[in-house]
Every structure is written in structure tokens, then in C-alpha cells.
Length: 257
Image (cartoon, rainbow, N blue to C red):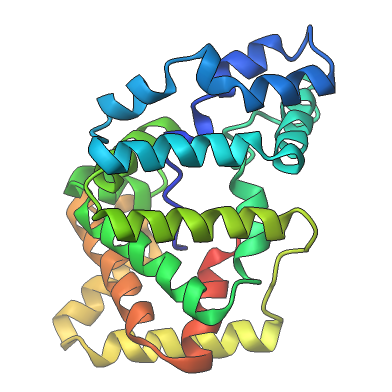
């Protein structure tokens, strides 16, 4: 399993229209369309329907404009839309959404304080998901759209300073991903951090609970939604309680596709 980005409608709101027009528009047209998406579709109304209101609604709309109004990010998204239409990309959702891979590449280059904060917010969102959606997400049986909707509704209730900081870091990661390759652990680092995470998890559990966790980890798709959700939340809580190099390596490990 891995920690997943809470990809809200921010990443996907413009996909249907932009993808439908990709066959007729050239790259520059798509970039311009993306930068004006809030004028073309009711972005603000969409966020409001997800539960955003007041200052959080203003932040969500501003983030959408900032991300898709960025010329370099717009060019990246346009290329993915064109590739998806040409058949060289399975689909924007199957390939990690419009911005997912870009953030994947940039996240490991964030300073440690920002990397940790980013995942602290994600952990809050993840723990607030209903058990069913949480379990299905861990089992990778929740569609991108349903996951996006569920996480967006939770994110809408974050306190405004937390949401503002999260959006700032999110945008920074996307910008870093434009010019840098994803940070990956080597084999030795991967084995080390897997052992450390396992040690931390099983140090917190009794024999019966340990056996249940092992069964869930071995085959999460056969677990109940409650079992899968509890296992996923335990992993996230364990990682967030780690410190120093262990925590950074664990976050990089779970950030890898």
C-alpha cells in the first residue's frame, strides 16, 4: 500500500471539457482554455456543491486558477490531454490524473517541514473519510472520481489556514515536478525503511491484532472495508509519528507509484 494524494476536483474539474476539445484544438489553444477554465465551466459552483464555503471556497477557486493558469503547468496538462486522445496515454485518470504524476515528481524535493506538513493534512483528510470509502481506497477499489469527491468533501471542512498552507505546498510540488525527476529510494533504503515501519507497527500491537494486520497487509482486497481502513490508518499514523531520516524515507517510500 502507499499513501495516496488526496486529488480533489481541483485536478479533474476541467478534464472532461478539455479532453473533448483536444482533438480540435492545438496545444496553445488548450493551454489558453485551461487558463480560462473558470470562465467556461462553473468551477465555483462545483466546489460549493462539494461543501466549500466562505474563505475555503475562495481558496479552492484561487488554487484552481493558480494551478491551471500557470503556463508551464498548463503546457504539461495540455500534452497529457493530447497524448490521452492520441492513445499514447491510457487515460488521464488511469495515468494518475492530470497533475498526479507532476506532483509525484516534485513531492520528494520539498524541504522536510513542508513534506511532513503536506502529509499531516492528508492524514487528517484520510482519517475523516467514511469507513466504506476509506476501506475501498486502501483496497484500490474506489474510482478516482469517487475518491476525488470523498476527499474534496472532507478537505472543504479543513480550517482555512491549514487549507491555504496545503495548497501552497501542493502548488510548489507541482512546480518542482516540472523540472525534476521523482526521488526514489534505492533497494537498500527500501528494505531498511520497510523493516523500520514494520517494527514500529508491530511494537504497538498485541499478538491477535498483529496476526490480523499481517493477514490484511498480505491480501488487503479480501479484507473488510473496516479492516482495510484501520490498517491503512495505522500505517499513516505510524509514519507520521516517526522522526528524522526514518520519517522522510517512509514518506518518500509511500509517495512512490
